[in-house]
Structures are given as structure tokens and as C-alpha cells.
Length: 99
Image (cartoon, rainbow, N blue to C red):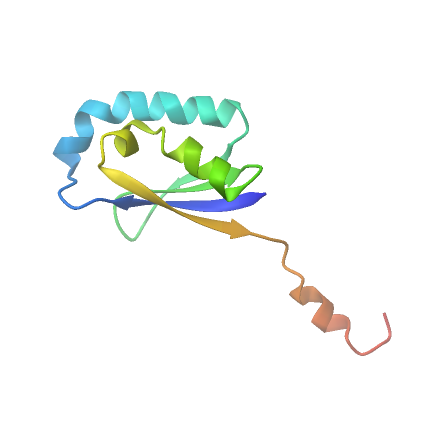
């Protein structure tokens, strides 16, 4: 299952509070990348934070993995997890019956 995972800064979070955890945050993300959970990761352009394209067996399994990020463990971020599926709208282009 492919998922879009967006970090959510918690009230009171700040770059200064993130700083002591960032090295471990990157190390944990690297482990998730090597395990094929993290497929892509991007810096957000609308605000500080990241967007992760992840692969997981379920939304619950993804939430468990995301909850282990050091910033999540200390209560500085949470995650929005959006399950994604194939875009089947292409079929409407062929709806004339000729396909």
C-alpha cells in the first residue's frame, strides 16, 4: 500500500526544540529508507517539514513506524497518513465503447 505521510508540528514545536533530535531523526529515516518503507522524501515548500511517500502493509503499520521517529517520540510532531491508490480515471477517456 502506498501512502502520503505529512508531518504535523505539535503546539510548542520549534526548530530549537527539534535540534537535539535531528541526527537521530535522519538516522531513523535512513533505516526506513533501506527497509523500503520510505520510497521518497521531500522538504515541504509551504512550511518547514517533510512529505514522505511510504510503502506499508497497512495504515496502522505505517502509523507505528512513523511514531518511532525521534521527533514523534518526544511529542514534537505527529503524522497525517493518507492512503493512495491507482488513478483509474484514465478509463473515462476510453468510455466511447471503442476500447
